[in-house]
Amino acid sequence: MSDRIPLKIIKIPALGGTPILGFAVRVHAAMLEEGWADATTAMVYHNTRAVVAMIEVGEPVGIITYDYVEHARNVNIGLGYVIADYRRRGIYKMMWSVLCEEARMLGAARVFSMVHAKNIAMLKVCSALDRRVESHNIVFDL
Ligand SMILES: CC(C)(COP(=O)(O)OP(=O)(O)OC[C@H]1O[C@@H](n2cnc3c(N)ncnc32)[C@H](O)[C@@H]1OP(=O)(O)O)[C@@H](O)C(=O)NCCC(=O)NCCS
Image (cartoon, rainbow, N blue to C red):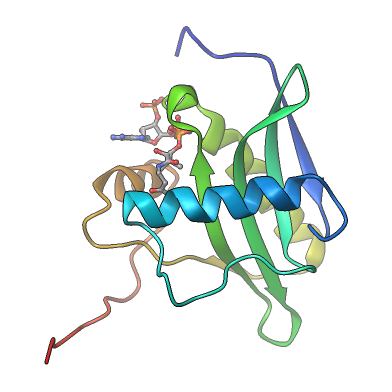
């Protein structure tokens, strides 16, 4: 797109002790407000890994958090978020590319993520990035 902005994508091996930890917590809160996260599940831990998009002034505008499960060779994504004013400029796509690079370096064989069935934007992002739907969660409300 024409309005792409200069960005730095950084890799964080553990959020604890970094200023990005606070950003990740705010992102979780924003995702709860937007209806894309589960209020009963903690998403950010001291040792959570992340890929972060920073604008030139050193401010984070996007994040993908993840864990690596070595015995299963799985990278599991937790949060995926870009601040509303910065969406549709390819920022998630850039973070995804760095995440895949990092996942390969770790020895992962696949990257897993969960997407709400109503999150059409994220489903479109996934399909644009060749991520395939492998399963559906089935719920019966009592
Ligand atoms: C989903 C989200 C992370 C996408 O971030 P983004 O930086 O805007 O995504 P990108 O610009 O990298 O988009 C990459 C491609 O995905 C597709 N895409 C992205 N957003 C889309 C939308 N709203 N509708 C349709 N397609 C979309 C497009 O093909 C896009 O490429 P293009 O702009 O060149 O056509 C962002 O909208 C967001 O933070 N949403 C709220 C949080 C959320 O839903 N997180 C995921 C929870 S599982």
